[in-house]
Image (cartoon, rainbow, N blue to C red; front, side, top):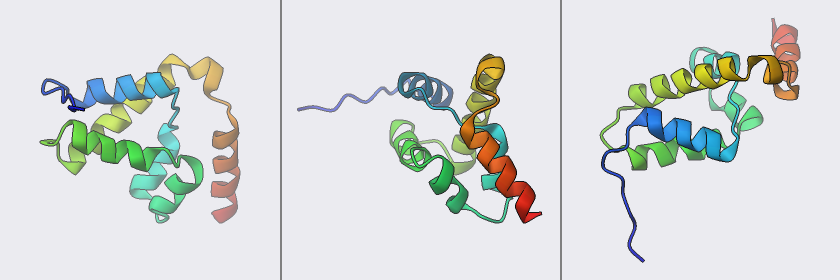
Length: 106
């Protein structure tokens, strides 16, 4: 079976499509801790195990994108989705768990 590759796909379109299709929700605060914090991939494996496979999928969908491009667009789309659903999804279980754990570590 042939595989269709969309050569006009860009990272923004890819992430928006995947996030909406799979009803993903990535808290921008947790993503920031992943990028700038000291726990690295551990925090993503704990809170968003679906994210690492999504990043691998992004590199296949847009092979010319750099790692920095992928992360930048992921954060951009996450912020957009966070803003769109702010009133409904701001207080969610994963966010509350992360805040409690983060404050305990301080």
